[in-house]
Length: 154
Length: 241
Image 1 (cartoon, rainbow over the protein chains, first blue to last red):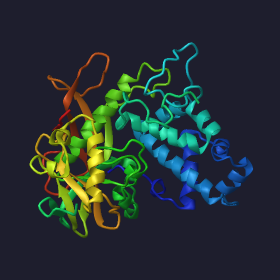
Image 2: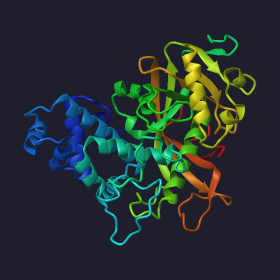
Image 3: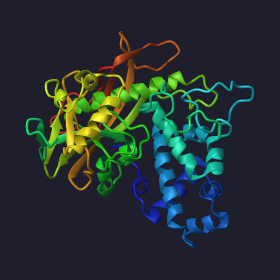
């Protein structure tokens, strides 16, 4: 039977810390990344990670949302952590085409990691939409009115 | 329009239903397993799925293991092909694996769910559902999303409908409410792989092999649901595409 640790599905503060630690160890996402994602002071985040400070409930919710996206990304990459690391860090090759596609990721001017650091929580939703497009979305449909296009440059 | 007794069926307690998820739902502590049927995947989805608009809580189940496997094989296949289609992009997520491991859940309701709208080819038109779209194996879902909203607004608790992926007449059960407090669940590990057309071998090279678009293979690892025979080794799963 293939199983994952309990903290993968737990939503407690203790589990959030375990999830952040797991991301440190397996995906190379450090306190600097999380501080930028949350718009939080890096030292405060590091203290929170050591259970020596608190985060506001809305910032804990951002961590929960991001963890759900990490689980989707892991599933998308068949739980291959190296593939997910590559996806987080790869940038557009110099001289590559600017042609947009319904499958173009929303971070097309940077890396996924940098996109999350720069755009914060709103980037999480865009990443989720991009992931969903591979399974449920109609890639040939125009975006609905008011929706950002998946291939919009950030 | 109230619930029509001629269309309404009850999904009984204790009878097995099935669902497949990522392995990330399979934790040692069973208290977390209930999330499998809380409907939040659909609630948080932007695009929605066959019987739900985006943002609408929905729990999708299958009536048999075979139906469940056919449904999942279709989506696994679609995702793989879409990723191949996107390989030329500068930020492509890379060549997908052509095999994957999932968790199949055997789900038994604690309490029966009444007033589920049973859509068949004969009955669908009574609630304005086009039978062809109900059975359409493509991903043309807008009509069915709209009809689900209509059906739910008329007081039904769910929909029982043909699985458009099943080649054996299986059905899916689409429930409109969170079932996490109303289930007992048992997890099973199942491996999927895509295959080529005849002569059938595992699909491993997108550069020179051709996928079978109507079948894949699965095998259970570490045990199968009660009463299920024949999946201990790689077994063909046919699906409509």
